[in-house]
Structures are given as C-alpha cells and as structure tokens.
Image 1 (cartoon, rainbow, N blue to C red):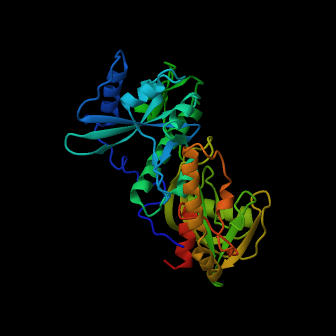
Image 2: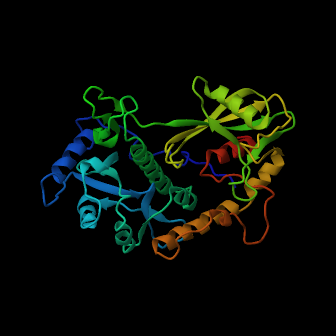
Image 3: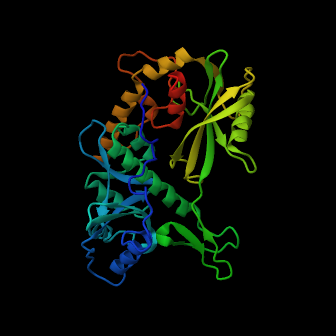
Length: 388
C-alpha cells in the first residue's frame, strides 16, 4: 500500500499559507488588539461582524477532538468560539487571558467574513476534562489522530496540520520560560508567536526552535537493496530508515554520512535530497522537528550495528520491500485507531496499545512492515521500491 499525498502529514496548513499584512484586520497584530479589547474590562463579548475567533484547547500536548460517529476515519478538532469558550471556563482553574492564547492563522470565508484561529494550553484545568467529556470531546494524542486520519482526505489532513502547528507552538512556550542570556522571565509577544525577556537591560527576543533531523534510505545500487533498521520500541516486525539529529558545524549531507556510519558502520558517498516533513509530535523538550529526507548511496556494505542506537540493521531486497507495502496492515491500523478515537471521545476507552493495531484479520502477516503514509520514511521507502 503506497499513497501519494499532496503534502506530507503536518504540512499544507490551510490557515498558515499566507502571512497577512499587519494592517489587515485578521493579521496577528490587528486580531490580537481586537481580542484584548474584547477580553479586558468587559462582561459581555460580542465579536465584530466581519471577524470570528475560534479557539482550540490543548492539554499536555493533546488537542481537543471529537468523533462524528462515522467510523470511516472521521474525527474533528474541538473548536470553540470566544463566547462559548469563556462559558466553558466559568468556574474552572483557567482564566481566559490574551497571555494564554497563541495566534495560529486565519481563513477567509468571503469579503466580509474572516475567521481567526487561536490555540490555548489548558493543562492546569483539571475540571475541564469532565466538562468537555459531557460534550463528547476529549484530549487525544496527536499521533493517535495521525494514524486514524483518512490520508486521502484533504480536509482531515489540513486539520492535522493546524493541530500540529498549534502543538509545536504551545509546547515551545512551555519549555521556553526563561532567557538563556540573563535568566530573566520570558513573556509572550506578537500574539504568542515570539517571546521576550522582561529584563530591561536584556529585552532579548526568542523565536520558536526547530530541530532538524536527517532521515535517509541507504541504497546498495549494485545489489538492488536498501538498508533498514529496527528498535525494540517499534511495533513487531517494523523496519524503517536510519535517522539522526544534525550536529553543530555540519551540513545535512555530512549528518547523513556520519549517522549512517555511527549506527551501522556503512559508508556513504552520494547523498540526494528527496523531501521534508514537519514533525510536531516529538518529545516536549524538542516539540518541533523538521524531518529532512534523503536517498544515500552506500560505498561499503558490511554492517556493524551500534547496539546503543539500534536493535538491528539489515539489507532488504526491493521485492521484499514491495511485499511489505502491499499488505493491508496500514488500513487495519487506520480503522482500529479511528474506532479508538470514537470510544475515547465517548468515554468508553481510556487506552490501547497501538502496536496491536498492526495486524490483519486473516492472520496473514508480512515478514516486515514499514511506517505508514503519515511518515516521511514511508514515502522514501515507497519511492525507491516503486522507482518513482
């Protein structure tokens, strides 16, 4: 199974494709001033007729989501308008403030109708879980939504991209609390898109951090095979590409060669760029990563695995990889995870091991599986296997 996507998962954000001018009413500066006017000193909130605010709550890195009840991979993000969201917060531990909101983008719905989207972290609002639950809304892991998504559905992919952007920005706020230069407190500015040190002698601006990661399919051209690795944390039979972080003072191509050598002892000559993918589902210490994909052509073939980095590494033939791409295991994982989202939102199920989703009802199992279409590794692998 190989899927050709218009954009990689978490890319193609429909509300972030253009940056409006600062004078536009839906730009981050103008919209933020309007938001502050609505929030400060008023008991009643009435949004301008031409501008609507929508807010997406997050808790511990998980976006609020709901299920339509249609189990054909249908879910939706839990957006609230400003009035309804303030009502939900009434009596909770979270007080609605412009300092908590981050600007995500806008969408034009006509000449006189624009929607401005905001994200907010309500991790401190324990009582909100029950309130949202009564509306069959719950906080779901972004990786769970990623697997449950219909990857051919542009609307669902766009919602994933919005949620990914919001998570990366909010997690960056959580981990960037103090100035690295003077130790002063950092406060959000520019509608949460930047932070600034409060120390008058410093006033340093801090920008969201992106950690580049190289991911490479190492190819043995002479023998028509590719190098795959696996780790104990992977689902059973899962094999994938090598990957590693860029180090200071090296190019992306140098990082590909170094990581391949360090992890497998294989030397690489030519390195060819394939594609990239934002990856906002990393650890909280590195909430926003950019996966940069390459084909790397081996100049040596002997494997010497670094057991501290990998569980194993093997050369796999093109035919073996093609067979891994034809089994129905991705579809089964997609379907069962969509059911999981539906059950979680209805309060039926609190947890399930996604590793169990990679199985087929017939009992037939591929000798190996590779990451699904939500991962750049899948597209590197399928492009090589199918000679795209």
